[in-house]
Image (cartoon, rainbow, N blue to C red; front, side):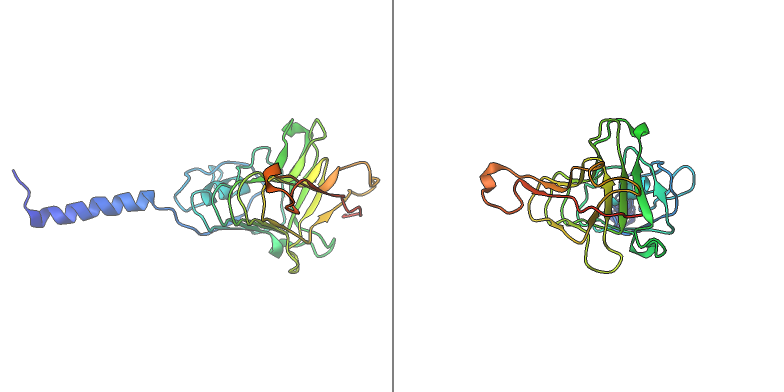
Length: 235
């Protein structure tokens, strides 16, 4: 039996609506409410939710990677130990913990910590896209080879790490580079690089910022640029 054109149109529209619902990425705000490391239960549905019923940073990044322009916030002061945070691959992702600043210690209240149990992890957080922002995070730790970086920018441009605005500074106490930058036109400012309580200024960390780019970029000021770490007790 042939379906009339009049009856077939609603059917076609319902199929199109179904496809749009499941193929469109939606930017949004994801609020981390756990210090866990579980993955998102269903990615690309606009909901940050793990099998434990929580929203972890791991799950929030997974959702944000399907939704350019997303904002990741935190509902509390957490110490997050995740050995495999996803690389940020969607453009214009904002990770902002400014509202969880530890006013008593005057430092970020959200800590991303790597421990020896993470093995040879090379960096805590990786930026692999454009126009991302990271504010108000404490990057802390070491690995089993003394080669841990806080943030690695391995692709993309116009990323911003740190800002002068109150509580938007990032703190770095890691065994190698606070920030390792491999691309141009990124803004790295108003961050603190130092030592943990009771350690000397030479016992942890090699450089605050280690920045390199290809020789073809000539005298670009961000090419092969080293900045010494800024010593100071951060806690």
